[in-house]
Length: 407
Image (tube, rainbow, N blue to C red):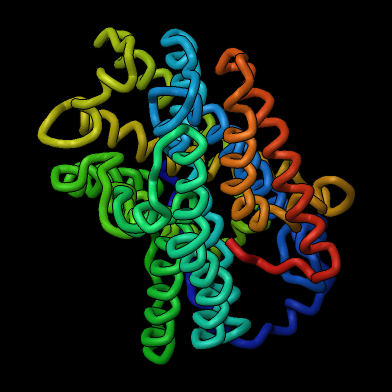
């Protein structure tokens, strides 16, 4: 894990000196080119979000046909993959599942301070309530219960519609929008903290990536003593994942002042990439040494409690989420810099694609119930169609509007 010291500061810098009026070097020009002057968007971050949303949608499509869990259609699925395919799928999706959500929080924190500085804390909070709070509320009280009611009815369960809201666990489940709820809380908390500290001239101190990793690992182990991984709480709060979410958002806030939204230091990116490979290799080695063959059965000691397996997972997860998020950002800044064509359309529709995935996935899965096809074939078709339809509809809904940072 890199030991580089990274810094952040609130956007209350003094006026530019005369020297700042001299022509910018080539590196500075490139940084400005990555940012859209009209919308204050950063192309690599937008494109990375789109890639991650597509990965999440495809992953949900596959998980709906497994015993592993992770997408609620598995509660009523008509077909499941063979155990050996589930193991392969867990090996492929497992590492990314540990840090994809954390990466969303990291990217949000990276841009949050500049947004608060432009709009002010009060307007920032209002925007978050509309863009995050309203969709989450609609999903929780209306859309998600209706979708699950339809899935259960299609599977032959005579579930009354009100039971889809009252009886399902966790109570007031919001499906894939659980993380939108947590992001809302964290964002509002950040804005309120900024509101209270700006007047006192608060300056965050240096922070090490190693320190952040250690803090997330220890906090996760402590929290999961009471709330094991994948445990259920009212509102589907995912309390067991809070250390990761809050820690990565805070990391994004801290490093934003060093210009990481435009360019992560190359040495840091390389070290994080190596760290990701080491963490994945370590996790696979531990699983092989223990002899894990059934993920739904053998994973119990890893999800929480006073077990060395639980602590080892927390360490691997914290390492992956910190190093993986930084590496992904650096990778995007090198390879995902386009602001035109397909990349622009996917980026503009990414948030709506994430919202639309639920009705599209559940609808496709219900439509395919009567087809006597292998589960893996259904999963591939559902994933392909769902990703295409989600982003296509997302782009259609946003093409006449200027894109805005929703996540």
